[in-house]
Length: 180
Image (cartoon, rainbow, N blue to C red; front, side, top):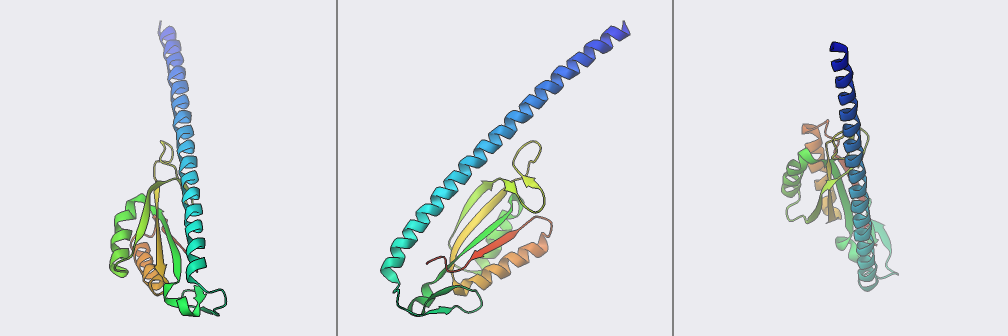
């Protein structure tokens, strides 16, 4: 009798395992589809920003103005429009430090304007962050266009948060001269 019960339990466990694997695949597929949709939306947003920048560049910057490097940031712009040069700052970090980053950033660069993509998935230098059962963590992206004078404040703010949360995978990318 004990052998029949063990055989039935083994078959039940196999069925449960098969269902569990099927559910895990379903969640992974859903995460990939959501990531693809977010990437498409982000690509659309970048294209729209580039179109707007192209229109405003044609109206506001003279093509004949000499180009000079901006102090300490690597951004360049026509000499007459140096104060209006923008740099794109992108912060990609673990969801757990979002409030800390925004608080420190707002304190370091008062009046900074930014956009947050609250939930993004991906793989960086450490772990995958896919919001799934297997890889439950998620990231966020903060994008800010700042003048060249504010870039150093952004760098200091992100460095301060990185010191406090050294294992959270906080990355800052600065795209110089985002206005051209």
